[in-house]
Length: 244
Image 1 (cartoon, one colour):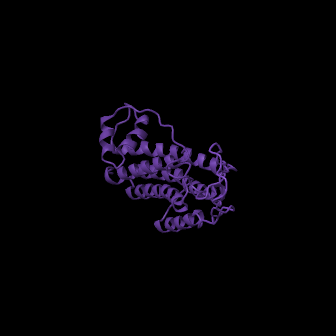
Image 2 (image 1 turned 90 degrees about the vertical axis):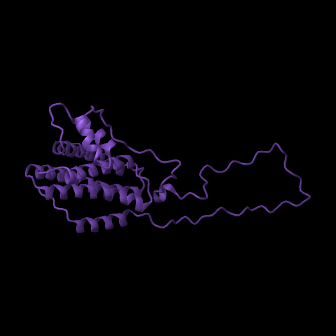
Image 3 (image 1 turned 60 degrees about the vertical axis):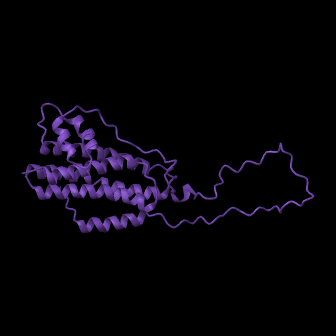
C-alpha cells in the first residue's frame, strides 16, 4: 500500500482540522451580581466580631469559563496531568552520543533510541535511523491507542473530542508512512525517505496545532512533544547524515 502526502493536501487538512477544533469565542457573559443589600446606615448595629463571613458557593468562579461547556484549559499554574511514554533505560554508546549530539534534541535522541541498540548493531547514522523509525512507529501506535481511549471517554468535552479525533486521524497515517520510509532506505531512495519522514512530522505538528488554536490543554501534551522531538531527530539524521 502506498501513501503519498503532498504539502498542499497537508496544508488544506491542517487548516480544516484546526478550524474544526478551534475554541469558539467565549460565551461566558455572566458577571458577579451586584449585592442586593444597600449600605448600612450609620445607626445600624455593627456585626459581632465573632461572626464568620458566609462561605462562597463551591461552584462560583466569576472569571473562569465553564470547563464542561467549552473544554477550557486550566491555567498554567494548575495544569492537568499529561500522559507520558514508558521509556526503557538504555546503555551508553559513544557513537550514538556523537550522532545524537548533532541533532536539535540530543537528550531525547539518546533516551528513545539507546534502549534498542546492542553490541550486534553497528552504530552509524543509517542503522540509528532504522532503529529510530521502528521506535517511532511503536510510540505512535501507543499514542494513537490512548488518543482514541480518551476521545471515547464520555467525560471528555466535545471540543477536546474534536481535537483528539484530528490527532487520531493524523497518527493513524504514520505507521504506514514509516513502513514506506524503511522501504525507501532499502531502495536507497533518499527523496522518498525524506518525504515520508516530513509527512510524519507534519502529522504530529497538526495534532499539536489544533490544541493551541483551540486554546485547550492536551491530555497527551508530553507524548506529543516526545513524538515531535523524535521525528525531528529522524528527519535530521535522514537529511544531513545518511549517505546512499
